[in-house]
Image 1 (cartoon, rainbow, N blue to C red):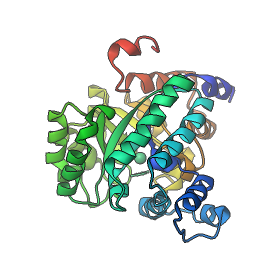
Image 2: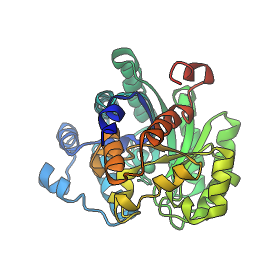
Image 3: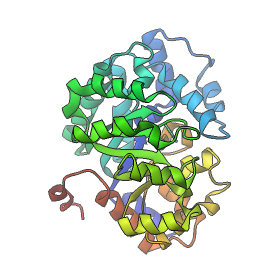
Length: 327
Ligand code: ES4
Ligand code: ZN
């Protein structure tokens, strides 16, 4: 459509990007060599050939294997810096990055190494690219709540370097309420709260993320359309949904982009945004997600494009006075 060049050039905020999911195969191999880490893939092509996912878990297995090359502070900086260069090309002016400390502390990498490396890239993105950013610490939901509590406590020396907490990894069988205490602790610490819900899991998980974890945004939430009562609530409360179109197709949440729930979410008065999730694994960065969505869904027009861009700023955790410059 003729909207695509306009959408591509428009300033936008990205609110759902796992920084470990921006690690391209070329950088995985370069870091493996730099750190002397052996990979179970012969080369970049063999690794990329493994990116044929059937569901969330089949992706996560490969995503955690890819992250195994990250050991030094510079590795985290280099990964995030590569993302910021892609973000700049897509006219991203603000990004809120998820990171998974437990993926790294399990290999003996200190929480401080992870956070300091990422923070250095964030500061550099502001200085050299004019991109503002913030970090959101995510708990792996397939692990226990006690491990999540220990992860939060271990990150507190760097409390000023992250703005919130999230919940990611395997959704089914790990409902939000499993993490009630750690999210209450995060709230006490003045941290923002988000959670993945309604990606592969049922609408009930979106409800418990709101009611028990008191989250301010839902990551994905695309299965909310299965519950009219939930959709009515999301619309009434103006809860932002950070939707990731290419991710949903690659992980078989929807059979084809033409069946994506985005048009329904918009038409029913919800507040969705467009995001890239794990761009190195799902076939594209933020603009690729806008293009795939708008090309497959002719019912999405200029009004919807404007709403999605505006929602990305409105739903960001930037202080209200700074949002004024964008909106
Ligand atoms: C993720 Cl797509 C997705 N879902 C849940 N957890 C994740 N971690 C990284 N990508
Ligand atoms: Zn995600």
